[in-house]
Image (cartoon, rainbow over all chains, first blue to last red; front, side, top):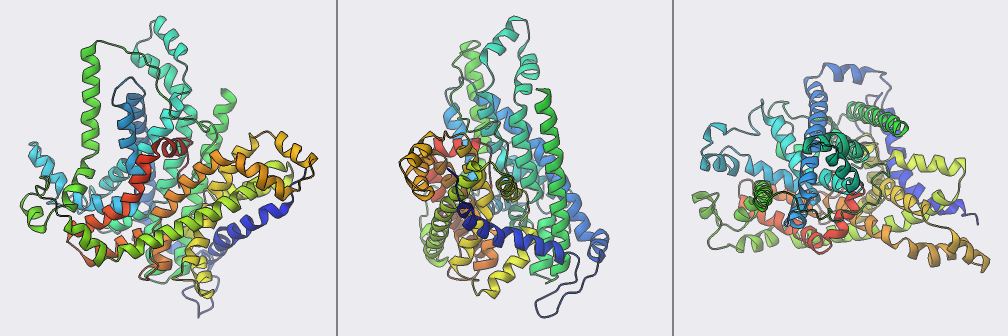
Length: 286
Length: 294
């Protein structure tokens, strides 16, 4: 039986109106000086992109976006894998701990942002806790000091999403046959060698999924940064999404904002293609 | 804000680890206590959350880290009335509920075609939908905002529902299509032999078979929509239609440093999510373990 194409029409209309048309329109406006609805925009070629490369805010945002994406992806993957390995075990508390470690991933990013904004204030709970355990020397102005604000933001993102990476790895660990690990053990492989040579290679599909989710998500990062630092201090935590939002909805420079968004889109696509190629290669080898 | 995955982990469940008890009892105890210690550090923010939300301003100033001796539920009552959070809770529930209903309807019907027609056109449409998993919403943000403004839809639930349906569709289409491709066609063919048309077949046969994946769709898209912030801020910020994250954002501006009120309001906003999570945790974790998050 042939399903009529009519079945896809409502979805296509919604998707077209909300995603496809606006995205294509935005791509066009990136090459214009559009600044509002009354003045007709004129095409200015690559002017917006030239300005972007010279503007301190946009340059900082570009750099920070890449730093956040790279470090979040690496740290979250390592932390998530460590948690999964620890909880894929016979610990009595494993069910409870899985539930708890995953919980932050479900919370609204805005709320996580405010929660940590408070925790990280100079007189706040983190510095208080450090003092309480005799580590006063580690106290920082976590979000106010330009040299560590970005690291603080990355820490918050990892705290929120490490549990997501963990559950992806826990699902992946179901596919690691116990027999294989036992065989390796009989062959004299120690705990580290079994992890390195058996478990981790079998987790490559889970790793690819976890890493692409983290990478794409952190490239688009907006909510937590916007509510915690607004991009500051200075441009220390500015991201492309945040600068784009400010240029569009504070300064009303729609064309320039669209150019920033187009750069972000190109970066996301470039990484996605790279990962797709990486995944293909792996599948051929396997 | 959506991303996805391959089917490698598939709909893998987080089952139990093989129950092999290794090492001496002492060593196992050390491992157990070690993980619990890690968890306690990890949960410190939740402790702060409760400690602040339940303290009077004087208590908070005197001993920021101590647990409230005399829980001040007044904060919760204050946040509720002064932030008009009842209204925001209603808005979030309406927008999330109607958007998810729309997503199930549009996503499942679209996926039925995309999974059952092996033609170049349907494959191209499928890939077009998947593209939406990557496209950052920033690029279309201003044009879509203008569209909504020109249609006089700003500050209405309708604008948000339309947005959320369109925005979450790639994920939903991806989930349904993957599931349908693995579903045998025998039942549908039997229905056809009995003279059922495509619509009847879909409604009577296919939709009930989709129930497991519909559960995943409902969980994932509810959480994504409930937590969404940027677009709701643009469309309904400052109006009576604002959703919880937007209301909390406004709340933070209004009560600048009255953290106990802000935290109490945040507690109201996350209580429904945590409640559903602890009731349905097996399904929630399973849904996310298939490797998708908005």
